[in-house]
Each structure stands twice: as C-alpha cells, then as structure tokens.
Length: 434
Image (tube, rainbow, N blue to C red):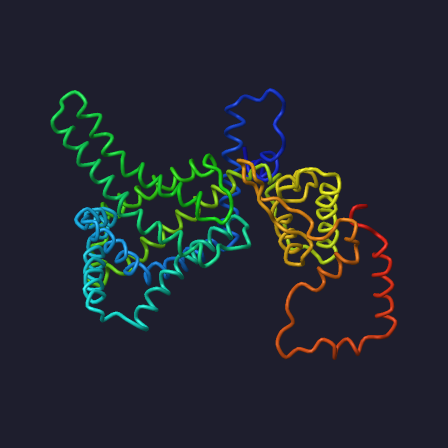
C-alpha cells in the first residue's frame, strides 16, 4: 500500500458506511480511528494550542492564590499536613517549584491573616483566579461549540464549592492510601495485590479528575461514557509525563548548570504547557466521542457565503417551525443535522446566529436526558423569508464613527427600489413552506 492509497483511505474510504455484517472489531477500529482523526484535525486547526498557551499564563498568575485558598480551608479543618504531602506528590517532578510555591503560599497566608494583603492586592489575586476559571471554561466551550458561558454568580458558586471539596477529597484519599499501605505491609497473601492498587491509585485519581473536568466544565451536557475513555487516556498521559520529568533530570543537568535555580521556572512552564495540551486534547476527543455521528466526512467546512448561510438558515428554521406547528418534540442540533445533512459545526453556527437574531431560542428538555433543543422565538405563521433575511442582515455592530447612512445615500435609487421589491417578494414566502 503506497502513500496515495493510505491518504485515500483516511480521507475517503474510512468515512463510508460499512457493509452489512461487518465484524464488531472492524466497526470498533473504524470508530476509534474516526474519533482520533477528528480530534487531531480540530485540535490542530481550531487554535487549541493557543488556548493551552493562554491557560499556562493564567495558571502561573493564579496558582499561588488558588493553592492558598485550598491550604487555608484544609488548615481550618486541621488537614494541612495531608494537603502539603499531596501537593508535593503532584509536583514530584518539580520539587524546587513545589518548595517555592509552598513558601509563597505560607507567606501569603501569614500576610492575609495580619491584614497586609488588602485593597488592590486582594482584587488582583481574585482577578487572577476568576480569569483562570473563565479561560478554562471558555476553552472547553470553544471545543464543544458552546456560545454561552455560565453566569458570574453560577461560576463563582460552582468553583467555590470545588475549593471546599478538594481538601476533603485529598484527605479521604490520603487516609485511604495510608490504610491500604498499612494492611499491605502486614498481610502476606493480599499484600502484593494491595501494593498494585497503591501503584494504580494515582492513575485512577488523575483519570477521575479529567473525567470530571470533561463532564462539568463545558456549559453543555456531556455524557459519562463520552468522557470516560478520554479522561482515562489523559490521566495516563499525565502520569507518564510525571514519570518522564522525574527520570529525565539527568538529561537536564547541563540546562540546570547554565540557568541555576532559575531553571525551575521555564521547566515548570513547559510542564504546565504540556499538561494543558493533554487536557485540551482529551476534551477534543471527548467532543468527537459524543458527536461522531454528526461528522460524515473529514474535509474543512470552509467559509460559507452570505447566500449559502441564508439558504441553510431557512432550511433549519423551516424544520424548527414545522415541528412546533405539528405539535412535535423540538429538535436538537444533532437531529437537525441528521435530517438536513448540514454538517454539525455549520448547523451549530447558524443556530447561534438565529438565536442572536431573535429567530430561535434554546431550552432544555425536562426528561432525564436534559438535551438542548431549539424552538422558534416567533409564531411560525408570522416568520416569512423577509423577516429571516432582515434579521440576519442586521446581525453585527457598526464600528464607532462609521455612518453607513452616508454611504447609502450614494447608491442609485433603482438599487434601493430593487431591494424593496426583493423584500416584498420574500414577504409572500413563509418559512413553513421551505
């Protein structure tokens, strides 16, 4: 098989329906390949690496106040020793960084207790934490094609609850590890099994953290099974990264000799950058895992023309209006994609534009699925093609200082009359007829 045949397989043959009676192994392999290819494509073409860089910068600014909050809560419950041991284990590949951050945190808490950190300093610390949480949520929402973010109040309450839960979870897991290691040292029969479980526990905990992030960070519903495999892969990759950093220090001896103690900073930044890259790729894989059926090909959607956007929007809005007029259950974005054949990302963009134009609105079903559905924002019999065209044309904002009416006055009168005639003809066409 030459390169041309391999390229044809991955770009065309892989995306064709499998023949009836194909074995489960072939179906599973094709499904995994499709998800990986889509994840790699979106990861490399949608600016996800830029997001990882931005999150690295935000993490450096916010890591001290975030850790300080967790340490303060833990000390309030008397768990400071467990938290510090856990933190050093997490940064076992960066012991110098761990010492530095813990020193900063202790100094921060002492000054906060004495009332020195007030005013602008406190506002800056709070701003760095909020900026990080907002950037993380925005990165996940971009991956999942979600346009709306959580409200400020909901974001604040959600992450405050996380800050309170993290110390408790760490203490429980630390106590469990101590209990299991004690039994393993005293038991001859089940000792090897428990030692294996102790070795496996960091992988389990790290995978659980990623699964939780992939399910709850995007402002949309993510199924557990869609987040499970990507979360496990990301957790294993993070542990492998830890292992690599710990055992590659001998190769970095010349780097440390040149930069001295300052070498810890760029190495820590690199570690954070790679960590966020792993995290975001797992999120992209979680997205493709849940939405594989929405993609029937691997080519670029391209930039739609104004005419194409209008036609496709009319098709989508016609479907939505007819469903309400017939008394059926509202469409989800995936159902609209399946019935119309419009690619998922194109359909999501068009639905978002129509939502901003006041043509449709989103709601959540009351059943256990809790899916996001779309309904017309106006009575279906009142939505004509001229309403659709006018509202879509008026999307966007005019730059400050630019008076478009001055340019309109330069247009020939016949052009304005032709446009008016065009709108009058569209007025006679209902979207329900599309």
